[in-house]
Amino acid sequence: MEGEKKCPPLFVEGEKIDMSELVTIQPDFTRAQTARSRRSQSGNGPAVYIRTYGCQMNVSDTQTIETLLADDGYQFVDAPEHADIVLVNTCMIRETAEVRALGQLANLSALKKKNPHLVIGIIGCIAQAKRKEILEEQPYIDLVVGPDAYRKLPVLLEERLISPPGTPGLLETTLLREELYDEIVPHHQGGITAFVTVIRGCDKFCTFCVVPRTRGRERSRPLPSILREVESLVSQGVKDVTLLGQNVDSYRWEDRDFAECLKAVAQVDGLKRVRFMTSHPADISERLLDVMGTVDKICPFLHLPVQSGSNRVLDLMNRPYTRERYLGIVKTAREKVPGIALSTDVIVGFPTESDDEFQMTLDLVQEVGYDSAFMFKYSARPLTKAERLRDDIPEILKAERLGRLIELQQENSHRQNEAQLGKQTSILIEGISPKDAAMWTGRTPDFRPVVVSRNGESIGDEIPVQLRELIGFTFRGERINR
Ligand code: 5AD
Ligand code: SF4
Image (tube, rainbow, N blue to C red):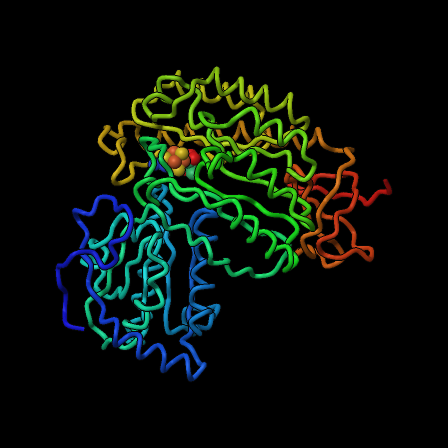
């Protein structure tokens, strides 16, 4: 490997985004391929440790990477100290997530001092957005690979494994419009639940959000390959599948929309439950709510981020709906899907958010009565439109607003849970309770965690229960006969 070259991107396929700052350092493929075939003949591949931060999409991407690397003979270990290669799959959706991932990298630099042959790769969203800054600021990093370039990981890793310590790092962050990792079945780690990506990327460009910059344009997977993946998972014992996408409601393949995709997945034999996330209030259709209300296997659970209760702030966020429209969707969802559980995401302290506007958010949260919510302080993210607005809400005020919102939501969650006591429902048994080996743990269709005494059942069984008692946010249930 001869030093750093500025050259055109390595793999120019499909549509690329913002290539202006891209610097790719070209690996020597022939050399890497030779080393790879020599290695795969010996059947004893290097040990990889992958640390994953962030959303379910990252978890799912890590599973795709595991399949890719396992096919090439790599082995997986559960601690960076035992690894030849450490990959950190990063998230930068909020500042806190970024700080956490970068903190992990700092720990790895200490490990590399002890073992200069250790290969350290940063992959995922920070890799995509920060690109060459990472290599400039943290020269011990060997590899920077964005979310659309994981197919190249085996060959990039080979190149690093045969490069002497101190060789400049490799960078591959091309965004490809058509990359879906479609035929790669993500490595399933056992258990009865699994995630299946149906759509990658996002075209919504909410002004606070870096995702369209890190994950690129929206593209839907063909329905037949989604169904093949679900069937394969079911044959490995999966009973409960969550369909994933930044915005599942804009799924489109040929003339099929998300409602049809969901319905088709629910028809897979042997699958007991299907759920999905995330929905967007501007795109969700009544047809989807109809399907949820009529197909038994589809869980009555909807994650519908509202972000703010103020129309002016929603407009600044480029969220193309009003609070009135949002409340209308909630009303329709409750009519069409009786007993539906609702969850949301909320941001407090978006630039210029006034006390009155924050109060509108509190009022909306109170009015909807969410079962659960993810609540965040706004943090400016690189490459976003809001980054250009003055982040004028002082940290202390953001913290105070967040505290008030969390308090309100905790009361709501508690009230919603108490209203469930005595209800007869069912749980899908996921495993033995980590706190008490005499109990099973599972979830109701509307996603509430329940523990119940073990009595000859098996993991993956769906059993009728009555919700008897609340221990924090977990229910104690009792098996009933129905
Ligand atoms: N600041 C705070 N929260 C954010 N989110 C996304 N970007 C930001 C940001 N810059 C939140 C939104 C989104 C969730 C996944 O993360 O609420 O729905
Ligand atoms: Fe980000 Fe908005 Fe897309 Fe969600 S819908 S991923 S918040 S841009």
